[in-house]
Every structure is written in structure tokens, then in C-alpha cells.
Image 1 (cartoon, helix red, strand yellow):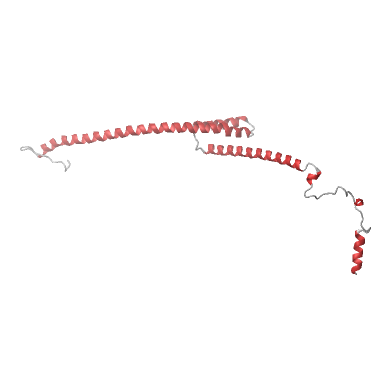
Image 2: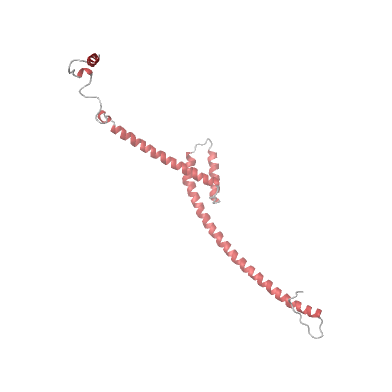
Length: 192
């Protein structure tokens, strides 16, 4: 018995009889509290179930968007990369593609294999783009070089080059009839 409960006794009634009479009142109050608590738990459960359904619907929409984005990446980036990769057996490519399809269906965007495939196929596309750009620049340079240096005059920079009138030593007139060596001998002889 609880000490908080006061047991009222009527004249001629013993304390035991009064205690038996007080128990049903306590049981009714306890039962009322339990029922209110159960009702609160049921309300809370209903609210949580509604929130769970809402969260699942949101997750399903997000999953559908993620799957669509992954499908797009698989169909564009990764397909080009897989086609460019040379394998001896076509079954290897088919098995690999089936594995990627499973990742797309599960919307496993955070999967490490998926992330590496996205990175590898993106790198491949960037390298192909850079290679194509270098090819265009190379052919442009070849065209420019062939145009700039197509004739003899365009290959000479600053006017230096072989003279058109003086094609050999015989074409150069001797001013005094002396050669370089004669002039050298005179200078040496005058010094000693």
C-alpha cells in the first residue's frame, strides 16, 4: 500500500476493511493513467508512421532522380569509354556493363566502383578532347609553316641570305688585285 493514500474508516469498520475499499479507487486512477499513456503512444506512433511514409516517398523521388542521372552518365560517358577500351573478350565488357546496370538500379551513387568509373570515363573524355584539340593545332601550325616558308624569300629573316648577283667568288671584283694573303703578309712584314 502506498503511504500517500489516506484510508478513511467509518465507525465500526476496521482498517483492513477500509484498505480493501480504497484499492479499487487507486486501481481506477492507475488504469486511467495507463490508458492515457497508451493513447499518447498510439498518437505518437501514428505521427511517426506518417512522417516515415513521407520520408520514404521523398527518398523514392530522390532515388529516381539519382537513377536518372546515373543512367545518363552510363549511357554517355561510360559507354564511350567502354567502347574505346580494347578487350580480348566481349563477355568481359558485357559483364562489366551488367554490374554498372545493377549499381544504377540500386541508385548506388556513393559506391566506390561507380565513382571511379565516372572519374575514369570523364578523364578519358577530357583526354580525347585535348588530343583532338592538339591535332587541330598541329595541322594549323603545319599549314601556317608551309605558307610562311613556302618560297626562298620567306625563309630568309631580316634580309640576310645568299646574294642574288654574287653567286661565286669569281663574281666578286678584286679592288686592288691583291688577295687576302698578300695583305696579311704586308701587315706582318711591316710589324717585324
